[in-house]
Length: 260
Figure 1: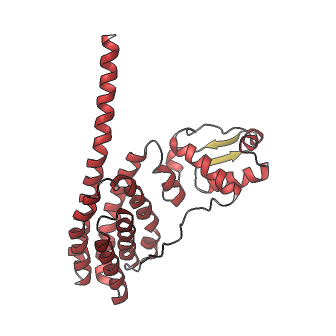
Figure 2 (figure 1 turned 120 degrees about the horizontal axis):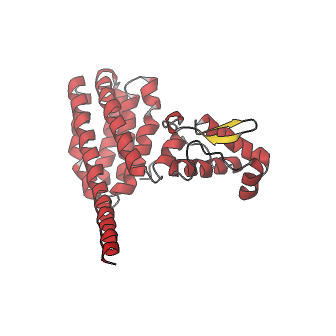
Figure 3 (figure 1 turned 180 degrees about the horizontal axis):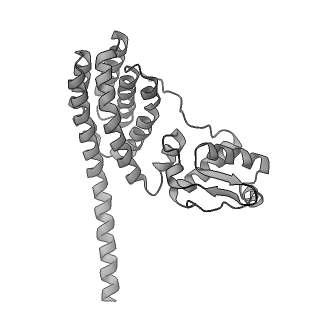
């Protein structure tokens, strides 16, 4: 059965200025453009992208709204300090998770989930309607049925967590769903070669579901804490491989230089 995907919450790249905002935003999150750095002039940027100054200004407005840049008369457009970036913006999150610091951002988002979602699970156990509980269970069962199909499993995993936030009845928690969406999307890249990890997480998801179904706030909260702790440990184990290889490669290069 073909599942219906939810539309993206990110800014549309279909427009010309949307594509330019996307490109410049990625450059900022990658570190190609550093905080405090002034962007090239409108004329230079326009020529580089092959667009008019009007289109370019629309792209800059998009980036300014996300807290990435600010424009001042006689100075130009400057990249704002990192602590002023709107990291909860769906686009900024997406750009951060394909940046050179993606691993650090992924772990930071994982930490945020461990603050947010256990409380959400507790509220869901208290407030979920029968229809909402049904949606949570349906997402779990679809994830279970997906088995080693990583793409399907990840999609239904996202549905599971978003359904729990929706069951809190708190509009602010519901709106935080894009944080989870970006984090799980990043996990796709990490877990493609490790489908067994997704299967191993199913019993933990089941416990969260059962605690919510039984109206057990403390149990649901504890189960979600356990689930997210294990998820973060999986991420750290997966990332440890590339980091160790990079460290060994750097050590080998230093040794060769000494020998030369």
